[in-house]
Image (cartoon, rainbow, N blue to C red):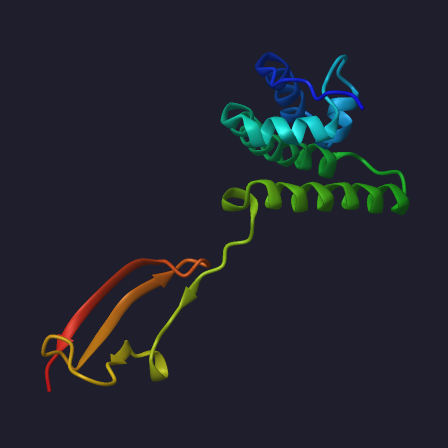
Length: 161
C-alpha cells in the first residue's frame, strides 16, 4: 500500500488556483495536474492542515464567481436550433445551481421570515408561569430571523398589566 504524501502547501495552492478557474470538480482538477495527490490524500490534507482547508474554501467561492461569470456569455451565445438553445439553458441552470451551493449568500435564493400577530399586528409574547422581573408580556416589532434561527433585529416594548 502506498504511503500518503505529506501536506504540500505549494501543490495545494496550484490545485486551488486551477479549481477556482474551471467548471471541473476537484477530482478532475487533481487528475489534470502532474504529481498532484490522489483524491483521498487531498481530503486528508484538508483535514490535517487549516491552511489547505482555507485555500480550498476560498477556491470554491472563487469558482462560484467564475461559474456565475460564464452564465451571461452562455446565455448570449447565438443558437442555430432548439437543441442548442436547450443545451445552453441546461448549461446556465447547472452553473446557477452549483454557484448557489458553493456561495449561497451571494447566489442562493433569499429566504426572509417575518413573524407577526393576528392581521399583521406586532407579535405579542406572553410568559406562562411566574412573572419574569415584573413583566407579564412583551410586544416584539421589526423582528427578522435568519434561517438558522438567530434574531437579526428586534425591538421590544414593555407592557404592564
